Length: 184
Image (cartoon, rainbow, N blue to C red; front, side, top):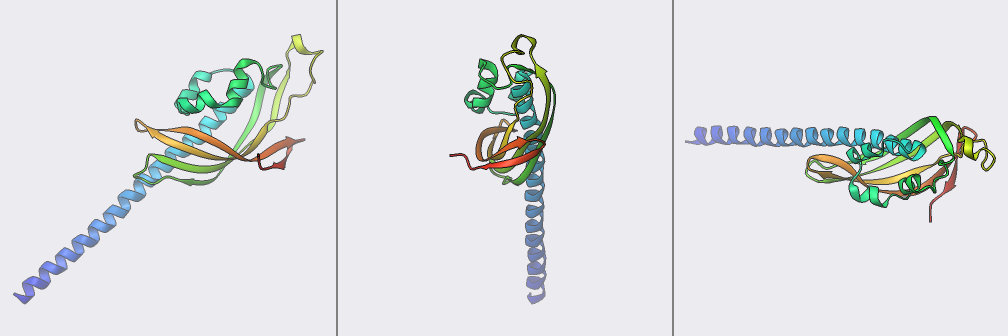
């Protein structure tokens, strides 16, 4: 009887250990899956947002990356379409976009994720629209980049950017960024 009890305890302890290891592996898999999906949403979505702000084209594609609540409240996108953007007087042909993800965390069981990113557009190529040549400067205004705290939400199995809070402003100045400081 003693040997049978030891055998059962040996098998049970190994099964418990195996279940714990499998649980850790499943959590790690889903954490990696969420992190990869969020990384793609951030890099592609924020570059698309900058493209829409600079060129006012393909705004419909933003629905793949951003939650509707964000799109309706984003002042930069609103300015691009209501004529108050500093880029309205320019025909932007190309730009260089840089995004550095500093921190990213998404629990496998949670529908929300947070991250910190640094967004920059070091160079913008374009020219003044012919009807505005006499009214505006010939050089394209620099992009106001910055460090952002971003919140994402999982909606119907897809990650979407829900909010962006700028914590630091970065102004591009002659090819190099200059930190202006925290936004009030």
